[in-house]
Length: 247
Image 1: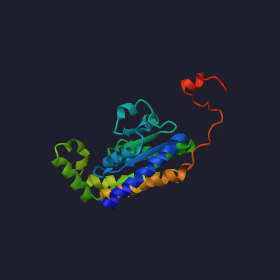
Image 2 (image 1 turned 90 degrees about the vertical axis):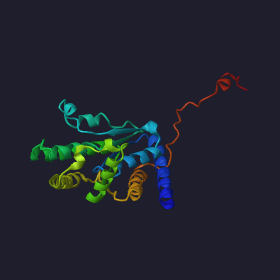
Image 3 (image 1 turned 60 degrees about the horizontal axis):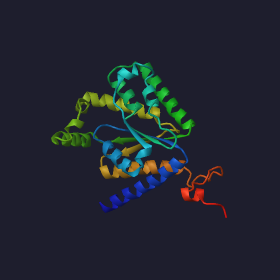
Image 4 (image 1 turned 90 degrees about the horizontal axis):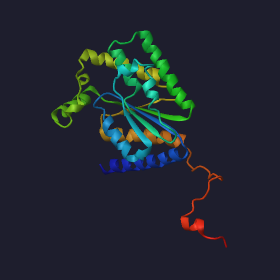
């Protein structure tokens, strides 16, 4: 337990230092967190948030919203959530959830579904081309682990609200979900935005692996030195220094 706590603390420190570089160098970061319910994603978002300066982070929880999607292109609402320079956008679920559920609910044709992958890959490529870093994490668990965690939520009156009807898929529905998910991951695992697969059957190991994936990506992409001091910056003077006569 102590070793894990120490590893998590060290990783949080790495992330805090990396975020400082991100802020001063005015870099944008997108973190996508996907996976089935019971994968420990919510706990990870809390852990990740504890490592970062919250004034430069926004967390977007994505749920299906087809009312807004009918107002324009289905990716439009995600464009509105993209980070500004120096900031991080964490997507707790994302455009991938929309694509996956459209397929499972039979709301798209095969042609439309394949086109969605092209649109996603182009969308992520555009972010990369404009200097935005992208880290995509997928938390996967066995059916047994998922069932045990969902059952524990049901037994806890304070956590019961986290269990929705989608958690009670039949065996046939789970098979269709796995088949669709396999295609989603295969079609969107690109060189500019690859997936980091997180084995989330053990919660602590998953947290270490996920934090490491983000920290490694930032260390690789961000400058390790602060920016050079701008010569045009006017030094700040206290009121007394401004009025003090020269000499």
